[in-house]
Amino acid sequence: EPEVTQTPSHQVTQMGQEVILRCVPISNHLYFYWYRQILGQKVEFLVSFYNNEISEKSEIFDDQFSVERPDGSNFTLKIRSTKLEDSAMYFCASSVTVEAFFGQGTRLTVV
Amino acid sequence: RKEVEQDPGPFNVPEGATVAFNCTYSNSASQSFFWYRQDCRKEPKLLMSVYSSGNEDGRFTAQLNRASQYISLLIRDSKLSDSATYLCVVNPRAAGNKLTFGGGTRVLVKP
Image 1 (tube, rainbow over the protein chains, first blue to last red):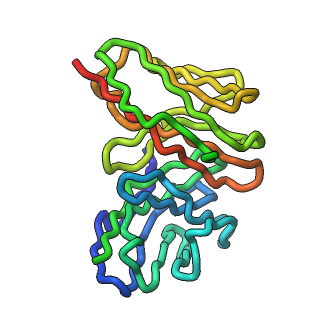
Image 2 (image 1 turned 30 degrees about the vertical axis):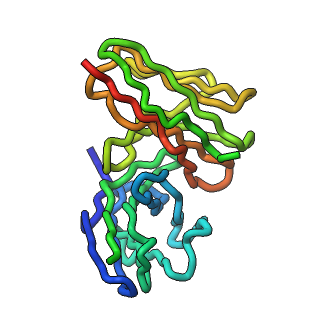
């Protein structure tokens, strides 16, 4: 069964450093997303990406964040100058229409 | 009012029993509705989409009430493996595929 894969599964970084989270969406999917979940809180939408551009973003997705699809298979989330409050589980998802399928997540810990 | 609201539980359910819970949503223009399941520190997994006519998938039945703006999930013959957090998820508008998550309802099935 096709699945969304994310790497790394866990990333520890120092405050102020840049991190890149990587995702390989399901191959025939058209929409790609990043969501995050702070421990004990609900899943929150960050950004959606379609046709090689951002189609929608939330208030959380400020200038600190960027997304890229560098080739035909990868989809990345870059967080510049990480803050302690960026510590969370980051989920990549992909979809054909609205039904989204999620990767196993990257746990980001900012120290 | 929260966009998607759920009773956090936990719902303690004897094995073999039936459990049901609801979720309310605030945006009357919402188009698509889903139940996802999330195990502790794992990714959300699509359980089922919720259609206007209601739908059933094995032991799981989902209903949508547009007039009162709620969806429901019923689990029959509960198994120990049904223990999880059930996430109510809404696509709040016709344009854009962003998903809005509720905080989840925790279900604990006990022998």
